[in-house]
Length: 544
Image 1 (cartoon, helix red, strand yellow):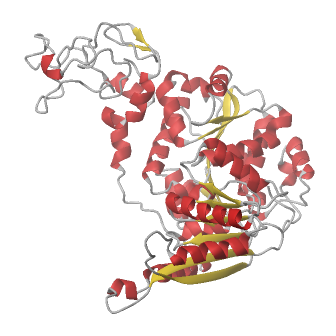
Image 2 (image 1 turned 180 degrees about the vertical axis):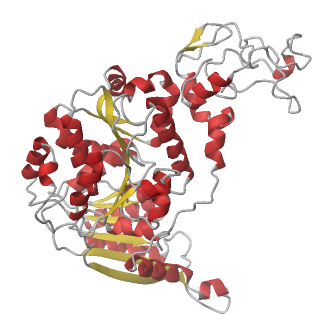
């Protein structure tokens, strides 16, 4: 949360709802920060999209949610979900859930999470009584359209705001193209434009970000750029000679890096960023063994996306707990937005790949008052000899590290790739084979086949009849092109519209299945989909 440092007398504080004013007062703030002050007017107006760009830990989250909370509290009886928060990471959504619950909890405005780790009972509660704020990932929003397309209009009937956190992580990416499609479909369902609010600390091109947030109308997007200074940065760059280890031994340079991390970071809170999950496991194991060898408490914990949810949440809770020191060795999972407070220092093993990523990582440090941000970087290069290649002589890792640091100090960030057509997003809308996730979901749900009229549920049991639309028996989900269930026994040279009826017998080889004489001529099936069906599928509905 935003601290009292660098705050000034607020001129927009009186425009917030009295309950929000009380919450701000209870936090001990002396006023609103620059980005919070300037965000109140455009967000409360509710007639245009807004981008909030400010340094990490400058209060962007509160800049968006304080005026949104004021608008929701002014109209608490609005039906349906009133605000949607879209985040790129499940851990970020969990963190924002705790923060927003503290803001809305005393005012009877529900805050819901929706992603893969959320129990079905909580999701069903949202479907039965939609209200308040919904925190969701783009993939979960897509699944919501697929599985509950008929309820979307009811769920979001009262939608007033859409907040996109870490906007830079979506701009110019295929995931961002998917998000644009989802936001467009959402507005088609509610039959009106919904104000969108984008948050980011590392936007390299504001025009591109505005065009992404509101395609075709980027010039109408209000850009609020915070004037808060990022503060002092203290940097240490350590170089090591990478030598080939003896058989059965660890590389000497990795041992030296782990030894320096152990001696420097013990007794304080830190984040160590490695460039791969394997490196995270490797260095965590080394540091743990050092702790056991010296018989001292182990303060080093791993954190990456492949770890179990309980392990990740335990590490995040330890980082928030200031009573015991802990150092998390992590990938980009702790890079964006999670409010773990301020750590004492950041370590980067290997050259950083992006300037924006390094800026995000450095923002985890230096949040306590006038405390500087501390960054330690570790780079290893091979020793040069008569057989060294010209590439080795260039010292690529060292050069890349120095270049990224220079660009960081110059406040330059990578511009997005605006020319990428993102064909995978297009194909996911129309090609059933590319929607394998939806196909897996449909196999665990109870639906009806159009041709059989029979239900088949999550136990894997199928109706004794079969689907005449495709050769696979009893399909249970269809997109704009056809059935997501794959056809069985179709020769490679057989057109897609040539169908064969297949007896419902598991394990029957394709060459032993008898074709249906009515479809042996290659005529397309009688059942076709009209334009209304296509529009319904584009909006997330489905009929089988």
